[in-house]
Image: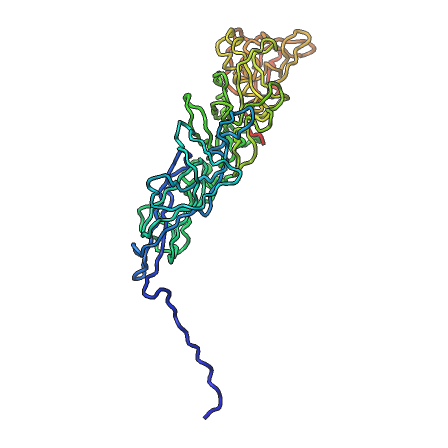
Length: 502
C-alpha cells in the first residue's frame, strides 16, 4: 500500500440566484430618425419592456418590476437657440425680460397626464441658472411654463412595459436616455414596433438619433457634408459664394443646425441654416430691405430687432460695436462654437450734411460684421435720383460690411478733372461696388504725355451685380484712342466677400 497522500478533491457548486426564477431583461426604444429637437414643448415617447429568457430566447412579457428612466447625459445650452433669448443686459432689455439660461435641455414633464403614473426626483438645475424659461418662442405660450427639469422618472407600480415622455427645450438639445429595473439584464435598444433585439449590451438611447456622434441629428441636413461624410460639429467651411481664402461664415455646423429665430413675412420663424452657404444676419431697422445685395450670393436672414442679437451697439460712430458682446448673432454660444459672429444693422439716416448718400459706420476698410457698427443710407436723397439707385446703394454699403472695397479709390486727373483709369468708376459697369451711375461723365488715362478721355453713357444703367473679375465692361472696354481698357484696380468683388469674424 502506498504511503503517498492523495491530492484533496475540489468540489464545485453552482449557486443559483433566485432559484426557479427566469432571467429577466429590459430594453428601450430608439429615438425616431425623423425627430429634430424643437424647443416649443416638443414631447417624444420612448418605451421600455421587461422580458423573460425562455427556451434560449428573450420573450415578452417578463416579471413585473418598477422601471426607472434617467438621463445619462443631457446638454445645457444657453437659451433655446443661438440668438434667443438674449443675455439680459442693462439698458438693452427690460428687467422683466427672460434671461438666457442653462437649464437641462431635456427632461421628464411631470405636468403631463401621460406621466401621472411616475414618481420624479433629481430635479437638477445649475445653481447659476434661472429656472424660468421663455413661454413665447415663436408665438404666445408655445413653450408652456414649468417649474422643474426632472432627469429621473420611476414607475409608481411594477410593470412589464412603460412609456415615458421626454420634453425638449432647445433646438440643439442632445442627450442619452437609459432604462433600468431590478434583476434585469440590459438588452440593446430596438426600433419602435420592432421585436426584441435578443442581444445583451447597453440600452443607451441618444436623443436625437445620432449614430455618428457629432451632436447633430442624423436626420438633419447639417449632419452631412456634400460628399456624404459626417459634418464635424465644430467645423465652419461654407463656400457659397466661393472665395479662395475666405471659407466659412463664422458659424459652426452645430450652430447652423441649432439655428436662429429670424423674421419671415413679418412673423418669427426658427431656421436651421445651410452649412454650405455663407449666411449674413441683418436687423433692418427702417424696413429698407436689402436692395440688390442678394446678388452677392450670400444667404440673407432678417431678425426682428435688437432682442435677437444681444442688443444694438450703444454708440453712433465709426467704432466697432460696443460693448463687444452686442450685435452677436450667436450670443448663446455653449457647445461647438468657434467664436463670436456679429449681425448687421441697416438704418435710414439723413446724410445730407455729410455729403454722401450712403455710409458704413465701420472705421477702416476692409470691414467685417464685427467692425461694422451700422450701415446707413439716406432714403430721402435717393428718392430724387434715378430709379434703382436706392437698391444699388444699399447693396453697395452692405457690400462694404462684408469686406468688399471699391474697384479703386478716387484719383482724379489733374489735367481734365475726370476719374483716372483704375479708380472708382473702373471695371465692370454692372457691379454695385463701382461708382455710378453718372458719377462722372468721362474717365481718362495718360498716353504719350497726353490725357485721353472716354465718354460714359448718360443716362447710365444702374448696377445690379457683384463682379467676379477686374475686367472692364461697357464704357470701360478698350476704345480709341490707344485701345485702352479701364480695368478695376481691385475688382472680383464676389471673391472679396468675407463674413467670418474669427
